[in-house]
Image 1 (cartoon, rainbow, N blue to C red):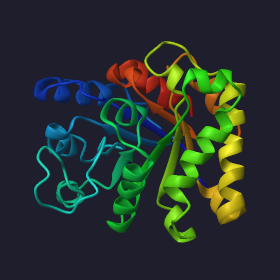
Image 2 (cartoon, one colour; image 1 turned 180 degrees about the horizontal axis):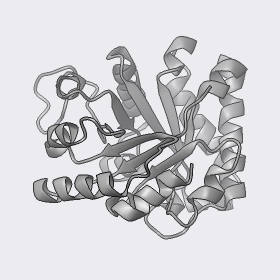
Image 3 (cartoon, rainbow, N blue to C red; image 1 turned 135 degrees about the horizontal axis):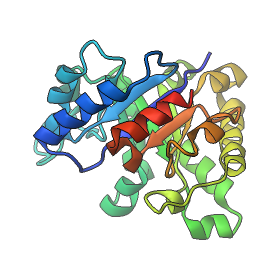
Image 4 (cartoon, one colour; image 1 turned 30 degrees about the horizontal axis):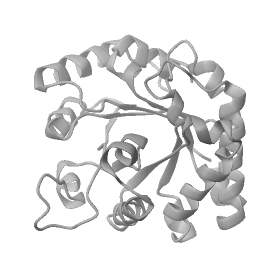
Amino acid sequence: MRKNIVAGNWKMNCDMAQTQILIEALERAMPAQVNCEVMIAPSTPFLFQAFNLTKGLSIEVVAQNASAHESGAHTGETSLDMLASLGIKTVIIGHSERRDSYGENDAIIKAKVHAVIAQDMRVIFCCGEHLETRKAGNHITAVTQQVEKALFDLKPEQMKQVVVAYEPVWAIGTGETASPEQAQDMHAAIREFIANKFGSEIANETSILYGGSVKDSNAAELFAKPDVDGGLVGGASLDAENFAGIIKAF
């Protein structure tokens, strides 16, 4: 049975003191009963601090990115071995900001996905379309091509280490949100596409998250859709009460 997940992507926000304050605020705001996996992705310098602060809590600390290289002359990069040594078990790969602002193409993202899987870690693989692609009616083709290029060389057993996060790029940080019906349509298309390659059992076990301006005010309606298994949350995850409200939507 696939898992419901609420993951907070903090992006490049929060210094050391703010990281502690936010985690402590989230601990206070968390519901007594949590019916989903909860993840937070702080900036890389504060992963170990966050890992220690969340010991004993129902919160997994995950990484926002990683290098596909094992080691060597890669200034400014962070290897999966380094992340594993901190206790990190899940890495976000292919976020639209990495694609659009830092030039990560399909080949780079595929290499990173395979490296995470080889490290026996879980990957949150991001995919999504820009506004002009959706307006042209090509959004499902564009997204499924991203899925194919990054994931379809994996073995069926390896797909069990993959969480897919659909992020309509036009809805990230804009305040715009895909309607629950739009989200469901895309999630169902992604799941069907995965089923055609890996079989229905694998597809039905794959969690598919929605990542486009999820808030406590719209989470319950989004999560009620049969193929929406949670959210990859940006700005709202920086507000403990808002993020806790999203968690409570399950």
